[in-house]
Amino acid sequence: MAVRVIYFVHGTTTDNVEHKSTGWISGELTEKGIQQSIDLKDQINLDEIDLVISSDLKRAIDSANYTFKGIKEIYHDSRIRECNYGDLNGQDTSLVVYEDHINEQFPNGESLKDVENRVKDFCDYLKERFDGKSVAVVAHKAPQLAFEVITKGATWEDAIEKDWRKIKAWQPGWEYIIK
Image (cartoon, rainbow, N blue to C red; front, side):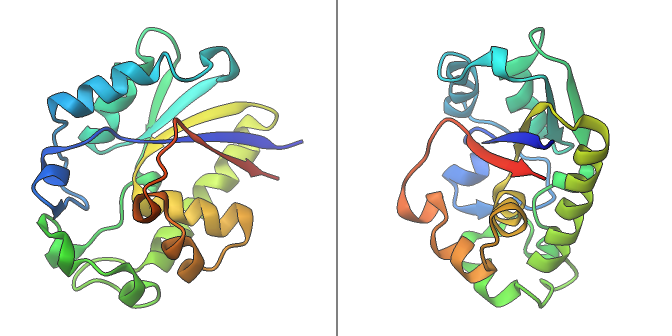
């Protein structure tokens, strides 16, 4: 069997609007981000989802609550947090260059490989606990790219290059299969 993951990114935050990379800072949804999360309910098939797991950072928790609260059981997990940009948490997005930190950690933070290891552990947990289920995940950019690497065999370079944010191809959820 397998676990079907339907991946959702949190709604637009004040840091997104201000071109800051939030990293491990909690972050606040904007009115637009709140509305995006509410509107998502009508863009997806809620009956296909068995449970919801969000990052433990506030912006993901809030997004998950606006979309799923009272409809599905919601859990939180620190393994699907955004990358810890260390000294660059909350700084201008131009300073956070993923290509430079695949193997090398951000100053006082993590590398994308560190994120991959966290997400791999999370995937193993899903496989062990929720085999045969469909799990909605509400999280961030780096963990989503890690899902591309882990479940689809992409290189980090390819995942970064083809990231929907870069090519402007948002959709209401991405599917990943954990076998």
